[in-house]
Length: 489
Ligand SMILES: Cc1ncc(COP(=O)(O)O)c(C=O)c1O
Image (cartoon, rainbow, N blue to C red):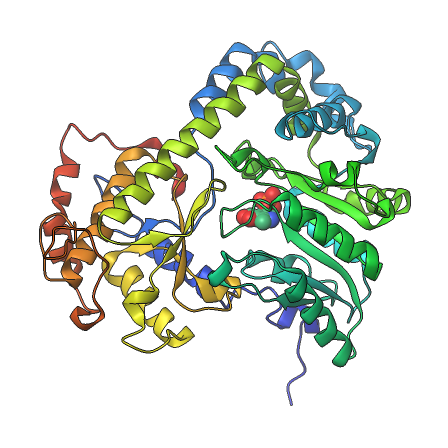
């Protein structure tokens, strides 16, 4: 027998990358859409990025050249920043992030900047949490569907387990007390020690926010069971319209709880759209967790130059207010335009008002009279990737308990690309019912209706699809190549 050269962890597949979620990214990378150079390529709708308000950030950077430090105006600060390595982080950075978090929560709560611990994005923050709160073999409960990265972030290096709390489409995937109790009971039967509950609010992939009643019941569940409650609130500023975003910090103000059990995970990857900066934080209400996490944060500090830039940008209250308001508005417009376009061809999405994605319901398309299965979901997903040439993520990669749902990211592209994607989906839908009227599906009474299962044909040539969609127009001088698309590759 040949001895394994690597550690068991390194040689294993705990990274979770053998999942449809990541396979879709590979399909995109092998054949990326470009309006001019590759108009038949795969459009990336599997990446939860927020690129809609970069013009505002660019303006700010141009008006504040000293904040970037490696500029004529900022170079005098270079030496101080280059040698700074304190794991507490720059006070002005922690203060600015705490203020920003308050603003995102409508100034209804206060945050103490001394409780902010830096990490490499929310990814690093989750691992920090798992290290601080649980031993190998212990478990966290996680309502489904949930972000696939959790399987890597919380489990891979820590040996911690994640146990699903099964939520269902019949009640908009609400996290009910009953579902929590069932998951807890099952863990006890399997002799697994539950150390905490991890919630994502607003939800990735659902794009919904947790209501006050649900949050209160979650807080009381964690208090009663004496288990930790980790709240990932990294999509807090992506909420538009109503219901509004309510942080667990607000619920804590007027409900009994043990603060030692409550921890927030936050980052600037989604709300500001800066995943490349790797600015993540843990905000714990538990002093011992703050102290331990801070020592551990040496493994994933935010660079001092980034701290300086972020401190400066987020201290500009006028900019922050404008950015938050404008970003919500643009996300709402994008969301409405996209869901309206889908609705025209009878495709519904879960009602939502947050996040950088929609949760698309294609159950009618794959059931063929029977309940959809993971296999039929993945079959349809392969057609969508290989023939419709759109990378969306199948529900099974989010541990969804029901087959037939897909997450579609809508904020990582410019308007033109979004319209190409919509046209592709509409044509696909039109093909399903043998119509070529731009995808609007109507019943004999003239009302819109959903795709019919008996007209299902899961094979389409992408060339024919593109012809139907008039993709060749995209190469015209009236459709300039988008820098956003370029940045995606
Ligand atoms: C719910 C959730 N948590 C954490 C992360 C990781 O974020 P970051 O880029 O800050 O590491 C993501 C990224 O998509 C996410 O959706």
